[in-house]
Length: 310
Image (cartoon, rainbow, N blue to C red; front, side):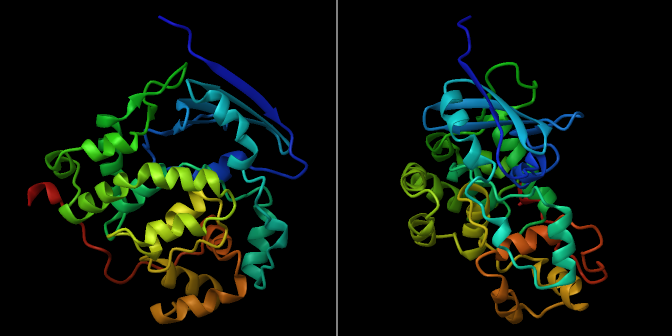
Protein backbone atom coordinates (compact mmCIF):
# COMPACT_ATOMS: atom_id res chain seq x y z
CA UNK A 1 0.00 0.00 0.00
CA UNK A 2 1.48 3.40 -0.99
CA UNK A 3 2.39 5.78 1.83
CA UNK A 4 -0.21 8.47 2.50
CA UNK A 5 0.96 12.03 1.90
CA UNK A 6 1.01 14.05 5.11
CA UNK A 7 1.85 17.54 6.33
CA UNK A 8 1.75 19.39 9.63
CA UNK A 9 2.11 22.80 11.21
CA UNK A 10 2.05 24.51 14.58
CA UNK A 11 0.23 27.82 14.35
CA UNK A 12 1.02 30.43 16.99
CA UNK A 13 -1.40 33.32 16.42
CA UNK A 14 -0.88 36.67 18.12
CA UNK A 15 -4.44 36.49 19.43
CA UNK A 16 -6.43 33.95 21.45
CA UNK A 17 -8.09 31.11 19.53
CA UNK A 18 -10.40 28.40 20.86
CA UNK A 19 -10.00 25.93 18.01
CA UNK A 20 -12.55 23.35 19.13
CA UNK A 21 -15.29 25.91 19.73
CA UNK A 22 -14.48 27.75 16.51
CA UNK A 23 -14.76 24.53 14.49
CA UNK A 24 -17.88 23.33 16.32
CA UNK A 25 -20.19 25.25 13.97
CA UNK A 26 -18.97 23.00 11.13
CA UNK A 27 -20.38 19.87 12.79
CA UNK A 28 -23.77 18.64 11.57
CA UNK A 29 -25.13 16.56 14.44
CA UNK A 30 -23.37 14.54 17.10
CA UNK A 31 -22.62 11.66 14.72
CA UNK A 32 -21.44 13.75 11.76
CA UNK A 33 -19.17 11.39 9.76
CA UNK A 34 -16.97 14.36 8.75
CA UNK A 35 -16.32 15.62 12.29
CA UNK A 36 -15.13 13.65 15.33
CA UNK A 37 -14.20 15.13 18.69
CA UNK A 38 -11.79 13.36 21.04
CA UNK A 39 -11.70 13.27 24.83
CA UNK A 40 -8.53 15.36 24.99
CA UNK A 41 -10.23 18.22 23.14
CA UNK A 42 -8.70 17.44 19.74
CA UNK A 43 -10.91 17.57 16.67
CA UNK A 44 -10.70 15.29 13.64
CA UNK A 45 -12.23 16.52 10.42
CA UNK A 46 -12.34 15.31 6.83
CA UNK A 47 -12.64 17.59 3.83
CA UNK A 48 -12.24 17.64 0.07
CA UNK A 49 -9.77 20.27 -1.03
CA UNK A 50 -9.22 21.31 -4.64
CA UNK A 51 -6.09 19.14 -4.55
CA UNK A 52 -7.90 16.09 -3.16
CA UNK A 53 -9.33 14.49 -0.01
CA UNK A 54 -7.81 15.18 3.38
CA UNK A 55 -8.23 14.22 7.01
CA UNK A 56 -6.81 16.47 9.68
CA UNK A 57 -6.45 16.57 13.44
CA UNK A 58 -6.50 19.88 15.31
CA UNK A 59 -4.93 19.83 18.78
CA UNK A 60 -4.78 22.86 21.05
CA UNK A 61 -1.69 23.07 23.27
CA UNK A 62 -2.52 26.52 24.63
CA UNK A 63 -4.61 29.58 23.77
CA UNK A 64 -1.96 30.65 21.25
CA UNK A 65 -0.53 27.32 20.08
CA UNK A 66 -2.43 24.98 17.80
CA UNK A 67 -1.02 21.89 16.11
CA UNK A 68 -2.60 20.62 12.91
CA UNK A 69 -1.62 17.37 11.22
CA UNK A 70 -3.12 16.38 7.88
CA UNK A 71 -3.12 13.29 5.64
CA UNK A 72 -4.12 12.76 2.03
CA UNK A 73 -3.71 14.45 -1.33
CA UNK A 74 -5.17 17.69 0.04
CA UNK A 75 -2.90 17.85 3.08
CA UNK A 76 -0.50 20.57 1.88
CA UNK A 77 -3.38 22.78 0.75
CA UNK A 78 -5.18 22.28 4.06
CA UNK A 79 -2.10 23.12 6.11
CA UNK A 80 -1.44 26.25 4.07
CA UNK A 81 -4.96 27.46 4.90
CA UNK A 82 -4.94 26.70 8.65
CA UNK A 83 -4.84 30.35 9.81
CA UNK A 84 -7.80 31.28 7.60
CA UNK A 85 -9.66 28.11 8.61
CA UNK A 86 -9.37 29.09 12.28
CA UNK A 87 -10.41 32.68 11.77
CA UNK A 88 -7.24 34.70 11.17
CA UNK A 89 -9.20 37.11 8.97
CA UNK A 90 -11.97 37.47 11.56
CA UNK A 91 -12.15 40.67 13.60
CA UNK A 92 -13.97 39.90 16.87
CA UNK A 93 -12.22 42.83 18.55
CA UNK A 94 -14.34 45.16 16.39
CA UNK A 95 -17.59 43.72 17.75
CA UNK A 96 -19.52 46.12 19.99
CA UNK A 97 -21.86 44.00 22.16
CA UNK A 98 -24.21 46.82 23.20
CA UNK A 99 -26.05 44.50 25.59
CA UNK A 100 -24.98 42.99 28.96
CA UNK A 101 -25.77 39.42 27.85
CA UNK A 102 -23.68 39.75 24.69
CA UNK A 103 -20.90 41.57 26.52
CA UNK A 104 -20.63 38.76 29.09
CA UNK A 105 -20.67 36.08 26.37
CA UNK A 106 -18.05 37.96 24.35
CA UNK A 107 -15.73 38.09 27.38
CA UNK A 108 -16.31 34.44 28.25
CA UNK A 109 -15.88 33.15 24.69
CA UNK A 110 -12.80 35.23 23.99
CA UNK A 111 -11.22 32.63 21.66
CA UNK A 112 -14.30 32.14 19.49
CA UNK A 113 -13.72 33.07 15.87
CA UNK A 114 -15.70 32.67 12.63
CA UNK A 115 -14.11 29.86 10.58
CA UNK A 116 -13.38 30.12 6.87
CA UNK A 117 -13.12 26.69 5.25
CA UNK A 118 -13.47 27.90 1.66
CA UNK A 119 -15.29 24.63 0.89
CA UNK A 120 -18.73 25.76 -0.24
CA UNK A 121 -20.31 22.39 -1.05
CA UNK A 122 -19.49 20.96 2.38
CA UNK A 123 -21.73 23.62 3.92
CA UNK A 124 -24.25 24.04 1.11
CA UNK A 125 -25.52 20.45 0.84
CA UNK A 126 -26.17 20.02 4.59
CA UNK A 127 -27.83 23.46 4.64
CA UNK A 128 -30.23 22.35 1.89
CA UNK A 129 -30.96 19.16 3.83
CA UNK A 130 -31.78 21.27 6.91
CA UNK A 131 -34.38 23.43 5.14
CA UNK A 132 -37.71 23.43 6.98
CA UNK A 133 -37.22 20.09 8.74
CA UNK A 134 -36.38 19.04 12.28
CA UNK A 135 -32.64 19.13 12.90
CA UNK A 136 -32.37 15.51 14.01
CA UNK A 137 -33.89 14.36 10.71
CA UNK A 138 -31.65 16.61 8.61
CA UNK A 139 -28.47 15.43 10.31
CA UNK A 140 -29.59 11.82 9.93
CA UNK A 141 -30.01 12.38 6.18
CA UNK A 142 -26.53 13.96 5.97
CA UNK A 143 -25.04 11.04 7.88
CA UNK A 144 -26.68 8.41 5.65
CA UNK A 145 -25.68 10.10 2.42
CA UNK A 146 -22.07 10.78 3.44
CA UNK A 147 -21.63 7.24 4.74
CA UNK A 148 -23.04 5.92 1.46
CA UNK A 149 -21.26 8.23 -1.00
CA UNK A 150 -18.29 9.64 0.90
CA UNK A 151 -14.88 7.98 1.12
CA UNK A 152 -12.94 6.56 4.02
CA UNK A 153 -10.83 9.44 5.29
CA UNK A 154 -7.10 9.07 4.49
CA UNK A 155 -4.38 8.43 7.05
CA UNK A 156 -4.78 7.29 10.68
CA UNK A 157 -8.19 8.95 11.07
CA UNK A 158 -10.92 7.42 13.26
CA UNK A 159 -12.66 4.54 11.52
CA UNK A 160 -15.95 6.39 11.10
CA UNK A 161 -14.46 9.57 9.63
CA UNK A 162 -15.52 10.06 6.01
CA UNK A 163 -14.52 12.52 3.30
CA UNK A 164 -17.64 14.30 2.00
CA UNK A 165 -18.70 13.56 -1.59
CA UNK A 166 -17.53 15.74 -4.47
CA UNK A 167 -19.94 17.90 -6.45
CA UNK A 168 -19.82 15.31 -9.24
CA UNK A 169 -20.79 12.55 -6.82
CA UNK A 170 -23.68 14.59 -5.40
CA UNK A 171 -24.93 15.08 -8.96
CA UNK A 172 -24.93 11.32 -9.50
CA UNK A 173 -27.04 10.39 -6.45
CA UNK A 174 -30.24 8.79 -7.81
CA UNK A 175 -33.68 9.88 -6.65
CA UNK A 176 -34.32 6.70 -4.68
CA UNK A 177 -31.19 7.20 -2.58
CA UNK A 178 -32.33 10.67 -1.58
CA UNK A 179 -35.66 9.11 -0.68
CA UNK A 180 -34.02 6.35 1.38
CA UNK A 181 -32.09 9.02 3.26
CA UNK A 182 -35.35 10.76 4.21
CA UNK A 183 -34.98 13.70 1.81
CA UNK A 184 -38.15 14.89 0.08
CA UNK A 185 -38.11 15.61 -3.68
CA UNK A 186 -37.99 19.41 -3.23
CA UNK A 187 -34.79 19.34 -1.18
CA UNK A 188 -33.28 16.60 -3.37
CA UNK A 189 -33.83 18.74 -6.48
CA UNK A 190 -32.34 21.78 -4.76
CA UNK A 191 -29.29 19.80 -3.67
CA UNK A 192 -28.64 18.56 -7.18
CA UNK A 193 -29.10 22.03 -8.66
CA UNK A 194 -26.48 23.23 -6.17
CA UNK A 195 -24.19 20.35 -7.10
CA UNK A 196 -24.34 21.35 -10.76
CA UNK A 197 -22.89 24.73 -9.77
CA UNK A 198 -20.60 23.26 -7.12
CA UNK A 199 -17.31 23.57 -8.98
CA UNK A 200 -18.10 27.14 -9.99
CA UNK A 201 -18.95 28.08 -6.41
CA UNK A 202 -15.69 26.60 -5.12
CA UNK A 203 -13.70 28.54 -7.73
CA UNK A 204 -15.45 31.79 -6.82
CA UNK A 205 -14.78 31.24 -3.12
CA UNK A 206 -11.10 30.65 -3.85
CA UNK A 207 -10.85 33.68 -6.13
CA UNK A 208 -12.55 36.07 -3.70
CA UNK A 209 -11.46 35.17 -0.15
CA UNK A 210 -12.91 37.60 2.34
CA UNK A 211 -15.31 39.02 -0.27
CA UNK A 212 -18.27 36.61 -0.45
CA UNK A 213 -20.55 38.79 -2.60
CA UNK A 214 -19.80 36.86 -5.80
CA UNK A 215 -20.56 33.52 -4.14
CA UNK A 216 -23.82 34.91 -2.73
CA UNK A 217 -24.77 36.24 -6.17
CA UNK A 218 -24.58 32.75 -7.66
CA UNK A 219 -26.25 31.12 -4.65
CA UNK A 220 -29.25 33.44 -4.77
CA UNK A 221 -29.74 32.62 -8.45
CA UNK A 222 -30.18 28.92 -7.68
CA UNK A 223 -33.73 27.58 -7.26
CA UNK A 224 -34.20 26.40 -3.69
CA UNK A 225 -31.54 28.67 -2.17
CA UNK A 226 -32.59 31.69 -0.15
CA UNK A 227 -31.24 33.96 2.57
CA UNK A 228 -31.23 31.28 5.27
CA UNK A 229 -29.33 28.71 3.18
CA UNK A 230 -26.82 31.25 1.89
CA UNK A 231 -26.14 32.43 5.45
CA UNK A 232 -25.46 28.87 6.59
CA UNK A 233 -22.78 28.73 3.91
CA UNK A 234 -21.51 32.21 4.68
CA UNK A 235 -20.65 31.75 8.33
CA UNK A 236 -19.04 28.35 7.74
CA UNK A 237 -17.33 28.38 4.35
CA UNK A 238 -16.84 32.10 3.70
CA UNK A 239 -15.84 33.48 7.10
CA UNK A 240 -18.75 35.94 7.05
CA UNK A 241 -19.41 37.22 10.59
CA UNK A 242 -22.52 39.03 9.34
CA UNK A 243 -24.21 35.99 7.73
CA UNK A 244 -27.28 35.78 9.94
CA UNK A 245 -29.83 33.08 8.96
CA UNK A 246 -33.02 35.13 8.76
CA UNK A 247 -36.04 32.84 8.77
CA UNK A 248 -34.51 30.33 11.18
CA UNK A 249 -37.24 28.57 13.15
CA UNK A 250 -35.86 29.58 16.56
CA UNK A 251 -34.12 32.88 15.79
CA UNK A 252 -36.96 35.28 16.65
CA UNK A 253 -37.99 33.46 19.80
CA UNK A 254 -34.52 32.79 21.23
CA UNK A 255 -33.07 36.19 20.35
CA UNK A 256 -36.01 38.06 21.83
CA UNK A 257 -35.98 35.94 24.96
CA UNK A 258 -32.24 36.44 25.54
CA UNK A 259 -31.99 40.14 24.73
CA UNK A 260 -35.47 41.58 25.34
CA UNK A 261 -37.15 39.13 27.71
CA UNK A 262 -39.87 38.26 25.19
CA UNK A 263 -39.93 36.70 21.71
CA UNK A 264 -39.60 38.90 18.65
CA UNK A 265 -42.14 38.89 15.88
CA UNK A 266 -40.67 37.60 12.62
CA UNK A 267 -40.97 41.01 10.95
CA UNK A 268 -38.94 42.60 13.80
CA UNK A 269 -35.85 40.42 13.54
CA UNK A 270 -33.95 42.17 10.74
CA UNK A 271 -34.33 45.65 12.22
CA UNK A 272 -33.52 44.35 15.71
CA UNK A 273 -30.14 43.02 14.56
CA UNK A 274 -29.16 46.08 12.53
CA UNK A 275 -27.03 47.62 15.35
CA UNK A 276 -24.69 44.61 15.24
CA UNK A 277 -23.88 44.85 11.53
CA UNK A 278 -21.30 43.63 10.29
CA UNK A 279 -21.21 41.11 13.16
CA UNK A 280 -24.82 39.96 13.23
CA UNK A 281 -23.95 36.28 12.99
CA UNK A 282 -21.40 36.67 15.78
CA UNK A 283 -24.15 38.00 18.05
CA UNK A 284 -26.30 34.95 17.25
CA UNK A 285 -23.42 32.52 17.76
CA UNK A 286 -22.56 34.05 21.14
CA UNK A 287 -26.16 33.52 22.23
CA UNK A 288 -26.18 29.94 20.91
CA UNK A 289 -23.12 29.11 23.01
CA UNK A 290 -24.44 30.71 26.20
CA UNK A 291 -26.53 28.41 28.45
CA UNK A 292 -29.96 29.65 29.45
CA UNK A 293 -30.55 31.86 26.43
CA UNK A 294 -33.18 29.73 24.74
CA UNK A 295 -36.86 30.57 25.00
CA UNK A 296 -39.01 28.03 26.91
CA UNK A 297 -40.33 25.41 24.48
CA UNK A 298 -44.00 25.65 25.46
CA UNK A 299 -45.66 26.13 22.09
CA UNK A 300 -46.06 23.74 19.17
CA UNK A 301 -42.82 22.34 17.79
CA UNK A 302 -41.99 21.72 14.17
CA UNK A 303 -43.57 18.42 13.21
CA UNK A 304 -41.45 15.54 12.01
CA UNK A 305 -42.15 13.86 8.68
CA UNK A 306 -40.63 10.56 7.58
CA UNK A 307 -40.38 11.11 3.81
CA UNK A 308 -39.30 7.51 3.30
CA UNK A 309 -42.91 6.47 3.96
CA UNK A 310 -44.40 8.75 1.34
